[in-house]
Image: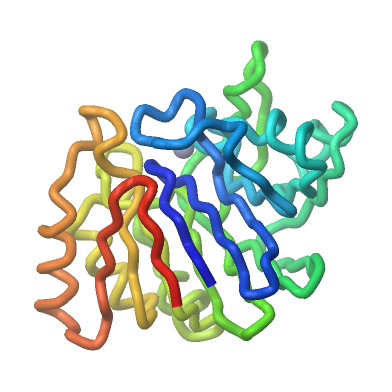
Length: 232
Ligand code: ZN
């Protein structure tokens, strides 16, 4: 399995069977992303919410690759009207595509579709638990504040192995809350995201890492540079 951070909350996940999953592919307007849209391939694109810094280049990539787009019901209705293969799910629900199981979970955030000219209501913001063919579970929280489901639903029921959580503050959790969230989720590995893309979400990821490690040495913090791969 390979997981490449594309900066902000954008990740490319490539399974052992070589299935390519993009999450929140904010690429062309992402000052932190070292790749171009044309360099990315996808079988599945998961969108956590309708903000342009997450929805990003979803339509352009899906147009070129024929990727299936997974999003909430409201996004899927909008995308189906544009002719895309969009699969709507909702919080608590799941979908199996190829051998990948995708569960939508809650997030505490907003989700208006601000990528279209007339901003449209975009349903609820969400996160995903993506279970690969080998059983490894990756949690991408989307944009969110800390909330108690991270402990009682995501941590205890879904039990992800790897958690991708925001630390940028202002629009999401900052390092202090994110370190508590990491303990609640209790994964093997936590990777911080949604920081240092723009000046207003400037953070020092080592502060987050120190807080997590001080509270629980069993959780490994992996800090990636944009473009860098985590592999196992
Ligand atoms: Zn957002």
